[in-house]
Length: 461
Image 1 (cartoon, rainbow, N blue to C red):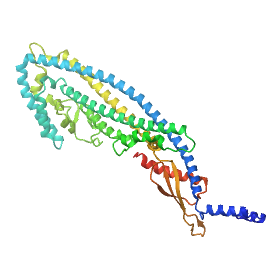
Image 2 (cartoon, rainbow, N blue to C red):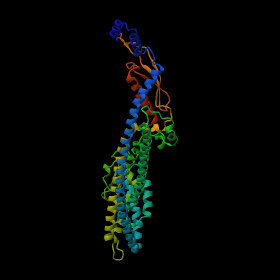
Image 3 (cartoon, rainbow, N blue to C red):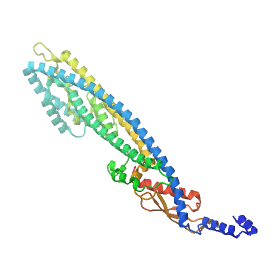
Image 4 (tube, rainbow, N blue to C red):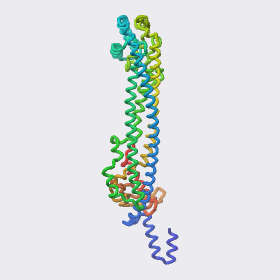
């Protein structure tokens, strides 16, 4: 710069020297920007923001594509779920019909059966409570009372025909229906949220594509400001992101699936408990039943105590009772019932697998949507913008240079005050290395203002 001044001085150009002096003063922030300078910085910042708006609109389009792909997966999920549900219901109907036929044959030898049953029930209850008390720290009284209620409304044959599984499968079916309804509500909420972001963003896009290079959003979008919904209004306030719609459900599913596995004679010591651990006390029932159960599962479903039926003589006699020359529990009805129950159990677990797989897909999809929303979702809020312009630099104030330890001068930070869209004025600083008359200055200021606007326009975490 000094060399240039000396050359111009030799040429005797006073005008050039004055101009250079002004440039040096501007670069050093000795002279503050004029009103026209602020206007030019604002115009350059708006051009930069135009590109950011276009980029965000394209990002929202990608976000919509992700949701459309998810919709296709959702349709396949519903088709598979419906087919599995139909098969499960058919198997359950068959099992219930076989159980009803067995109970009808039971009536033939009612007196003999009744006497055996009245002696079987207390033995079964006492045996279960005894084994439960040896392993489990508390709840034996509750288990005893619950089992007594179950036995009083249960057919004697039920303890030998996996009758407890019918109850378990029915309870699991009700639980599955509740979870499916909850999942559908969450999915609809997510789809509506994406649709709202997309719709509002396309309103902005329509205006951008038919507007002059410098965008103003005054009265054109004001009808949308009255009718449109912000992203916050779609969800419970505050909105914590799409992924949080599904995260709590995954924890619930883990507990439900582990519960189901334990009820269906899976290895309970390999199934996580409510805290995600696998060290819950286990009651071994194999000498008198088939497998093992956790303390928690017996508390939840005392019909699991049926597994101890072999330890009670009167219960064992029910299995071989002769009703007018017939032994119902040794005939084809029992086999047909158990086959139907095995099918119902298989389809119940298949239904659970479908629910779990779709929940995992939705957790992944919602995570992707959150990333898109955090980067681009802000553009949808412009549909509600009612301000006269999109970007205005209101003031630029330079601080004096400061001397470093080595004696060199370090440019002071530049304070700026700007207004973006319909947000309140923002005040922040720009590094002194970027003078206000540098073209980069307007981009740095516009980007900082946009980053701050994003934080307030859409809450994503």
